[in-house]
Amino acid sequence: MAADVVVRQTQPDDARLLKKFRCSSGVWYENEAERFIRGPLAKRVARGFGAWVVERDGELQAVAAHDGQPHPDGGGSVITWLMVLAARVDDSTTPLGVVGWLTLLLKAVIADAQSSGRSPYWYALVAAENETMRRFCERSGFVAGPVPSNPRYLFYTGIMAAGRD
Image (cartoon, rainbow, N blue to C red; front, side):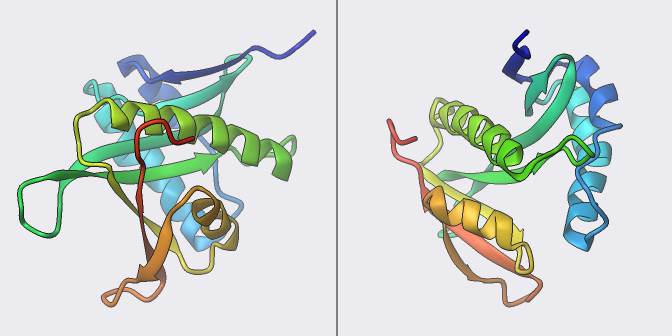
């Protein structure tokens, strides 16, 4: 029997699932993502903020969230901040599975952000040590730059034009 996989936007009652979501194998940047998902993101979802999840047979496999932020040029446009993009970590998780969940999720997030009316510019902070996510971002069209105030991170930016996968 095939597994039931759903990519969907969260509802307020999903906050309880987010509070238990495990995406860290013990690496510092995974710990930070897990704390963010279980804490601030779960609280925002409980208040109605729409994050995105991949759910398989009733279990969350991946979580993503984006929000609008003022463009740093001060011109008044709003760009998209990719707040988090994380996959479940447990004994059943495979690298190929993680890439699959994150790809499904990123497509949904891109479509959602494109329909938001924001400018097509995106940004995300990625731990410099997180080679897997760095490669994923680069394959997805993001370009890396330094974060002078915190060298542990790279600042990824990109343009997600309409119709782009």
